[in-house]
Image (cartoon, rainbow, N blue to C red; front, top):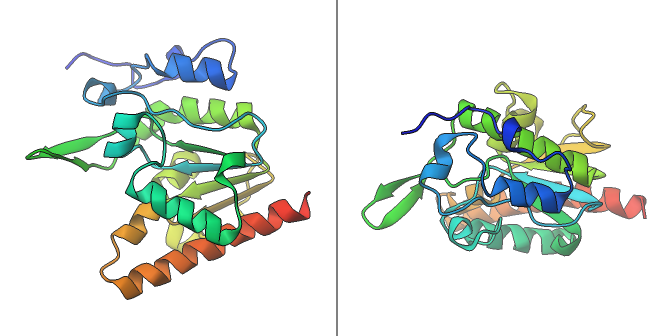
Length: 212
């Protein structure tokens, strides 16, 4: 495996508009994940989006289509947004890590959590997206997204749904990743987990409504 710098910063463009960032990210070699992924999956949305959602990494469907949150977890995400009264069309959606990390099991490609070095290497892309979008509300979906910005000690179980002290956005909150709902053991647990996610997203909707 060729050596990589362990840092995406050298691959960022001088002019850091979202279109420039997306184009530059296609050739990022900041960590080794690009070697096996189909393509870079950059964020989707516009500069000036009022709310920005950050997940962990693209999954199998996202890797093939090149768009974030379009697989099974993306469908749960869209359903939760609708239930909370939020419009994905006015949000910016991205991931802490831009390449799909997986292990092959027969013909299947199974999600494998990115390690600390891979998360750190990809952090410059996420920071550049934040600087370009400047959202009113930043929502961190799952522990990887939260730890990429707040450090490895961050615990979703302790902090979810609470405003987090940060200069990243006027309101920053963390909640569960939609994929965790799919992993719940039964329908009752899935329903409860979904309602908890919707409750957290309603806090976002209320904040945006107050600022209109």
